[in-house]
Image 1 (tube, rainbow, N blue to C red):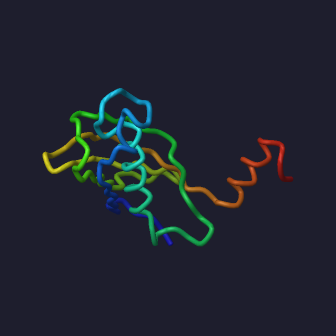
Image 2 (cartoon, rainbow, N blue to C red):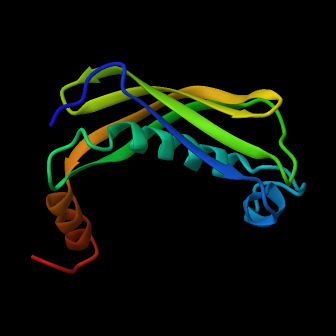
Length: 132
């Protein structure tokens, strides 16, 4: 399997109380929370890679540089799109954009890194004093 510039992915959800700024603690208002928009953008990038990675290979988010430019109230659909714009070894760069029915609500750049899942998890467990 391999990744190539131009891969695209999408993720969508509905704005409900549980993913509002008031519910997740990133603000006080009942509008789509920035941390939830971030997760949606990351999910779109992960979806872009689906079917293009080898067995046992995954990716982790490494950086985000985004803006959240418009509020979305409860009841509206939101979605994010990601396009792979650069590959530098195992480092990947995505252009990410989030939308609601009114247009763009956020955009930016998201970095991910290709990993061996087992090695990555073993390293994390070792850090916690568990595992070899």
